[in-house]
Length: 256
Image (cartoon, rainbow, N blue to C red; front, side, top):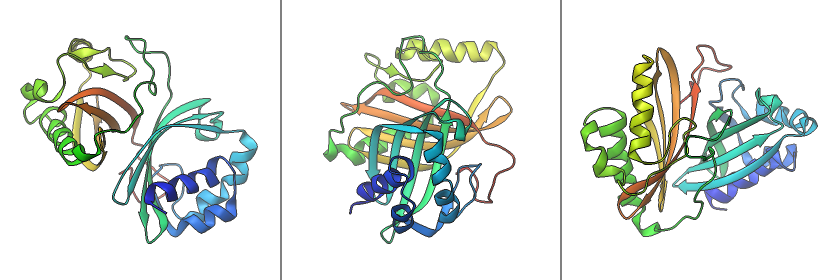
């Protein structure tokens, strides 16, 4: 199986067929967990399966991209009270090693209302295209994150984001550079600063590039998981989930 196939099979065992035996075959015994509320090791997540089945949780997968040993899923969890809310949108990242799913990171956000442009956290383009441009698109987004999100050269923003089409799925930001500018101005007026400080994970497949970052929102340690769609050498669409990084976790693996 490819890493993508392996992860999808494991995910199905955990959240759709609720099959502990299949999950046990697909997860590494030393499965490294980064979800703050779940203990590390495969036994912990497999032990949750009966409760997940009883809860009636339902998962919709919107996008899946993979590069090397990393697979990123863009999911909606409904009936997700087991995770703390009726509904949650998540980016789940899995790392495959030696034919097993060996590590997991995620970032979850309550979906809320549509954003100023009437878009949700999950609608929009889904088709993976331009596979031959994977490296080029990954380099573009990596440079954008360094220059604009990390603040090295924010004035270069129009070198990365299309000035003609920029479709925004962030819950608080409208389409276009003007929508982004308005949101940043509102944050500044409220005295709320946003800072990206580290981006340890970047995964690209064709026209989609995903990044996982740590930083702060105001004074709160925060994880920013971002998915970008690239077209003709510019970023034209963006999805994200934003979640607080708690001070205490069920393990010592950290959020990222």
